[in-house]
Image 1 (cartoon, rainbow, N blue to C red):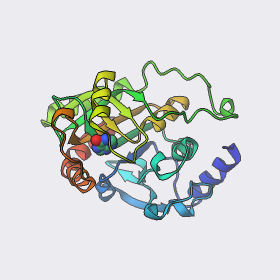
Image 2: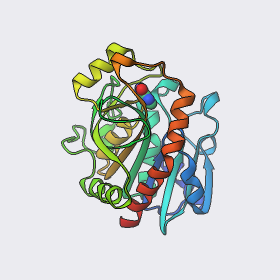
Image 3: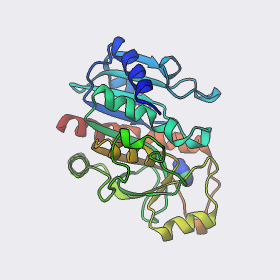
Length: 271
Ligand code: HPA
């Protein structure tokens, strides 16, 4: 990855009015409805942005949105890149670097995740307080990383404390159940075996999914405060495991989405 490429992506977007957004937002699978809340909407399709990762067939709908959300200028990723689609760590985190260069000062991430903690129910939200990188690589393992920041990035507090507190307050004020815990990132796309769910619980995971951790590592590399919330879409009880159907995961994500939007709205208002 090169600075020149990033500059070209950013210039393309700035020429189309993506001007100095304050907050970046990544929308997870089945969590696209926040787009409807954007005013003064600008759209850039991923496949039109120079040097953006090349789309796979099923991923033609990805787009970067810019607009005003609850009075703040934001840039929003509608659709993210996953390792399981064949992209590498550099590809999937490239948009985070682009949004940072556009000017964002905070990053909010959502995802769909399986509930490992036996006390958590599907349809609930979980504030990610820490993570396990089980994806077998790093988005910072490239030769010129030092040009972009510190190579040995501190990860003692990867999720911004202030935004975590905001999310807790908003959840309490609006009666939203907000669990908290450790998110484990795996490659996928296959779901986990019972033995794997059992292992993840023993490792200290409260939820499991296939994204977010690379983006959070890069946000930390950039010194960009980040908060992330999982929508728990299935219950991963190794002793009573039901077959997991992706359509059900997406349906559960859609059902829980209004609460996620309320939480994000509250955080954005307070930033
Ligand atoms: N495992 C991994 N990723 C997921 C799951 C799961 O059970 N649910 C939603 N995303």
